[in-house]
Each structure stands twice: as structure tokens, then as C-alpha cells.
Image (cartoon, rainbow, N blue to C red; front, side, top):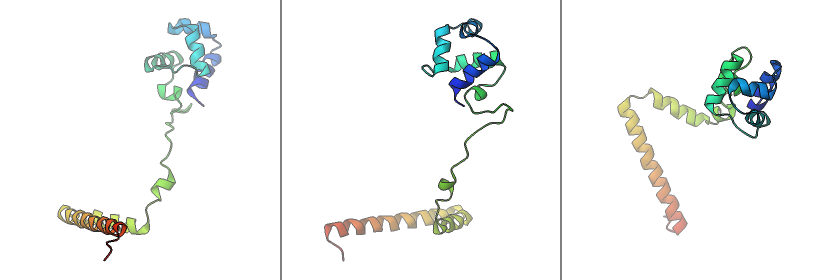
Length: 130
């Protein structure tokens, strides 16, 4: 559910008109209508006023919390986590097992190899391949 529907449903659950809610929150009825239609986005201060009035959290209003207080944070995408190849995973494991001095050596070596690779590609593009 989006914030606009949540705000409207909370008001309707209390059997309030937009005008009545506007009086309670000390804002205009047109502002309430704008929030509920999606034409306007409430500022954080207004969200706090809504949360206080309806005795809920701002997280609930913005859809990050369910009716039971459970935080609804989207999980990390599986695809991003599984995108590491087995060779990359092996290299990472080895790297993590190294002490700080040896990590520096591995990084330096990798940077040298990358530089050599890039130079070879540039030479190949120029027709200077040996």
C-alpha cells in the first residue's frame, strides 16, 4: 500500500471527513485531499502529526512497517549476491585470509597486471602487437 492510500484509510477508519481531519491537524482540507490523491507529498513534520493523531509510526505511514510493527525493508536482491563467480569467490577468500602486509602485495600485483593488460590492449588497437 502506498502512503496516499494509508493516509486515506486511516482517516476513513476513524470515520472522519477530510475537513474534520484538517481541523485536527491544523491544515487545509485541500491539503488533505492532495495527500490522499497523491497530488502532494506530506513533509516530515506533517507525517509526525499524522502519526501522533492516528497513534502509529511514521514508518507505518510510509509503508515500511506493517500493522504489527514489523519493519518491511526489501531484502537484498539475490542476483546481486550470487553474481560473484567461483574464481572471484576463491580470490576473495584467499585475500581475506592474508595479513595486512600480504594484502598490500596482492593489490600491488593486481594493479601491475591490470596496467600491463591495458597497455597490451592499447598496443593491439594501434597495431603494435608483438
